[in-house]
Length: 236
Image 1 (cartoon, helix red, strand yellow):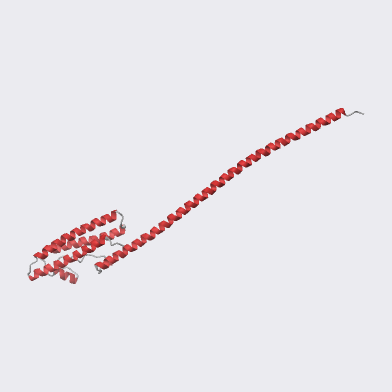
Image 2 (tube, rainbow, N blue to C red; image 1 turned 180 degrees about the vertical axis):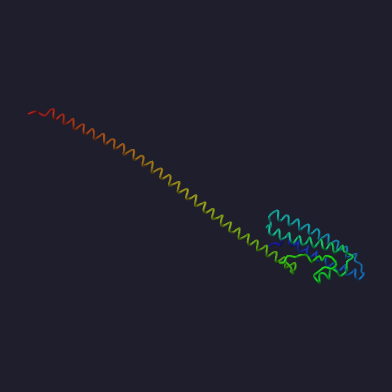
């Protein structure tokens, strides 16, 4: 399976966000030691701009994938949640970057202790989903790919069921057509039989009529013969 460009972009964006957080900590360390932070500041600004562009690209890729039905609505919502987390990270990182007067080791101590001090936001202490909490980028990507594979397997199973139902429908349709042909043949046979029956009935009726006429003629002939015999027979 070819790697999903959205997740490739997401992984690189998360790495940029992590790099920004590390650079901010390094800048704060330089400030505490009285060293120059100009070069680091320029680097952080460039990384923040890159992060912004990557997030915009992720938004565009996600919108395109959802609108063209390349992914399910459930997967679209899940990716939107990940994207919202990145937007939150960007906002917190930007706030930490601009807070140049904060204690130098504040972000690092917040990461170590799990809480922010004096109201300075920690860019990594966002509310992460329970299923991805504590996982690295590779583990999250593997988990996401596994979920996608499970969804693909479910879609394949659903497609197989639909295909079988379609095939059953076609077979039922073919059987109905055959039954209709049989019914049509039977109707034609009954019609032909009925026509022959009517023809034979007419013939029988005609024969009956002819037979009755012949019988009457025989009776008449017999009567005539009897009359003639009586007429010519000598009287005693």
